[in-house]
Length: 442
Image (cartoon, rainbow, N blue to C red):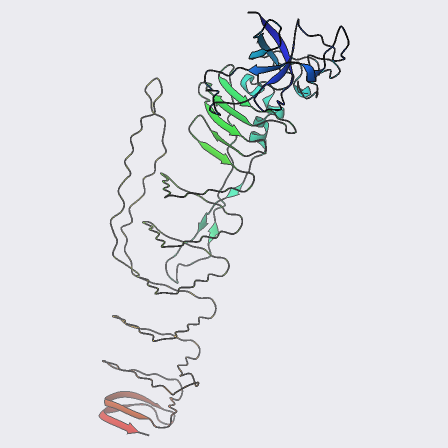
């Protein structure tokens, strides 16, 4: 059975069965003008079945499905003596030197292939050959169109009390998108590229086994891609919207630090409960307003009992090189927080308003100090029934005033019990009153 070379001139099978029309060297003429003795138009060429690789089942949709592009050089054989039933066995790469002449056969009728910018070079993919990759391939894009000076959280938020609280100062920490470490050596890079059509490049997959520069990458024409570099670094870049939908439970583990930079708004909706555990320091900086709505209880325990730190994650590394060496996995020793303080410091540069619709109850085991530079007013809202003001002191009451003390009310009753006092009289100055029991009704 003889094997022929042929050119694919049509791959749009009307029954979508993967067939192609081929013009066979030695059987057909280049002329597409039909006459009694010569010429055959593309639409009258025989349909040929395209054989699949043994890696594809080629049965009921199972397998790898693609057809040769128009203009492809193929090997074919005929199933019949009349040379009407053909099978395409394989494609043959070459070195195209001229653009397709669409007026003749043995060429892509649309003139799309061979691609004009790639004339004079082998059909073997340039990424696989490492040929002119820095100009018009995805390598040029992945090494020049990168994000730089991406800021990360680096404010120095220091101080724990009024004396040490200072304005946060940024350390100016930034990072940049890693460049593609492309350094292919022929023939170690296996490349799969689809039809570029109106794009500079098609969809691309690379399996690069170049020693010391191993890479795995998948590229979408629009510029979204992921790339795994020789040291295991994983880069993912999406140039449009990104959606991740998980119908089950999601677990994420970060063995080292984690930085996130959100250049717009961030909104999180938690339908059920949320719990955050921080075994180090927690520092927040809010330049704008900080508003919280709590429909239920709000509890804050300063100086709470500390639970045990979580145990170190167990990890056994099995991935090895031929020489038995292990890849380097970054790790970080986190210092254990042993300090336990119970102070609560609140510094407000402007006004402080509190509205309690129910009761307000304070229990203080130590001393309660209130220092007011201006006036301090405690009053009952005049709307509604009048209310009482009760002050029960187990120890002494000391009242100092630079001016008068005034009590205004319809009826006032004061039971001092035993009174020890220093009184200031504007006429005779300071004098001491002896101990006495005083009851005053006004």
